[in-house]
Image: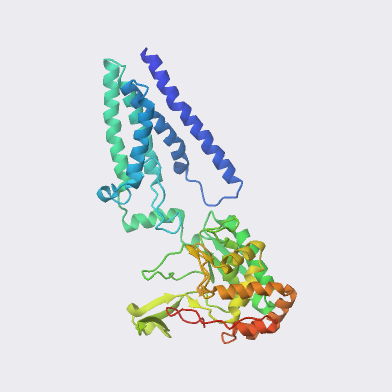
Length: 452
């Protein structure tokens, strides 16, 4: 085989899968664009897919030219896959650091974080690493069969590409300094001054740049709740700010901007056994604000009494010992306004109603419970709520669906002062509509305080 024929064969074997990979990647992106995606395009991440296909082709060429055997292709596939599995799931991270999986062609993001933006993602370095690795294997494939000056040229190219590949690989594993990490995240999540805000009526919606497309979907839930509550309450201005769920060391949310914290996730998929639709979370947060629930976690002091963890309210955190202060969601146990808030939320849309039925059935992330005192779990990816609602609240709110919605709404408006009074029991609300409910036992909420 002449050197020209060999070079042509190598080129075709390399370019063909690359073009196929780009076509497949483009098809997937085109389908996703139909679903109204948000954020901005990271081109280096989009190119990783096709380059990975080309890398596999280069690995096959290198092994094929080296072995000259029909076993070359299966051996290349086994070796390529084995290397990926070893790096991705193996214990090599103990030797090279927590970012070792980035030495594999593809890897998953670190889900110890709460958003894609927070996860470590050296996209540019990874693309350069894959390009150099592909070039290295392609150069290695041309060594055999070439003679004299051509072989020396290929050998020199292999050495240079090997050195560059090692350097690019190590660049992915470098620990970032705090300032470098802050600068990296600022590219994806700028400060609040750079929010995209849109005022609609009395509500101001603020989203990160690139997420403005979600404002319409947030507003669809919020406006339905606002239209259902008494006019004087609906006339009060409030703000919804998108915010990354940063946590303090005690797992409580940090100080938030705005009255309601919108999350970094919004699913349009229907509710199933593992997902509660996000529209319910936005509607619950809005309705909770309307009935007077706190919109931020409250400062508490945690102590142990008779082997039980007990939370006590802190009146003035400024004068308390900061080492003794924790921030926790308050609980709505036994309060009529919890039922009212969930009813308003469920009426915001079919998706939110479906979400509440899902939670009232005892479902939550991680399992199912028959306990009526089971705290319903909206999940940390939902619009944040600083109130703990219980399954029995959801069940009573759904029972109100047997009463005409106009009657329920008019009654709640007429008795609004009673509805929003923390002292009004859920059983009293049930009596207003002739609903027969059994006496609800108190929930186990020793590590939180009643919502004031």
